[in-house]
Length: 265
Image (cartoon, rainbow, N blue to C red):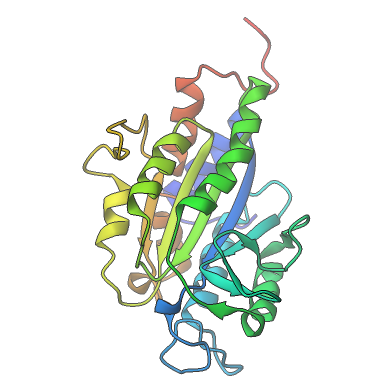
């Protein structure tokens, strides 16, 4: 691994190594109509062989940061908000490689390949629902806590244009996910109003479910990609990983779970 001048990056690596945690990274991609038709130059998903669109740029940039910490570099890559063949029903948690039993992509290159192959075969639709994909990853995270040791931690990277439809359900899903070994990184692409994403980040307030239940910890980090599009990788990495070390350690401390190789007291 190459050295980086990024304190958050180094700290996250240290904490993960110290706890001997297996990090599992999931990627969720927004294919809703608000992104614009991929055949139009104004679209954030514009298909152009000459240059990357906003989603590809974000996948490459952020994916290369988080893949350093994924244990096997195999990423389940999911899409949401699109109509799928052959019956063109809307799905909010589909494998972008169209293999639901094996949604894994090998490295960032595999995600990019699956993304570019997927684009011509789906129809952008909506609404923009985050909760299904959050709950999807949470199901796997809930299985991990049965081990009663600090064995696994799940990271969900959501790349979106920022227009969210199921805010109440998403708040509830995040509050429940905060009880699990899981963090969410939301990367906003384009120039939309990201006020909803900032709200979910919860840095200045405790996030509450629509039932009034408070999140036991902050698990969401929002990154507006437009502010880092042309910035050095280290600057983007610092923002992406700003809260992850604390989130990982806080979770296992709250549950009093020992590292995998530690001796029982």
